Length: 111
Image (cartoon, rainbow, N blue to C red; front, side, top):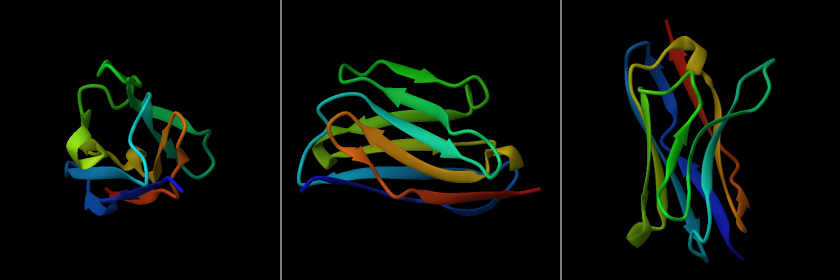
């Protein structure tokens, strides 16, 4: 059974960086994959996405600070986050066409 697993979250100071990983086991990425953020008291937000062909899109708030990439050999989609802000705090999870979503990884940015 295919599943998605995220890793790389943690506690970081404002201005710092983190790289999140979304890995699939039992399958491969066959369609678009997105990174979502769920912050307490806020609606879920699509932070970044990459299509099957590699086209990347970003939400306005992290644009210029976050980069999404895919390594097909490793069945992994990354989210490189730089210049982190306290408002970037939240549960980050990935979701992909045909694979559902993972449980998420927590990111906490302290001021």
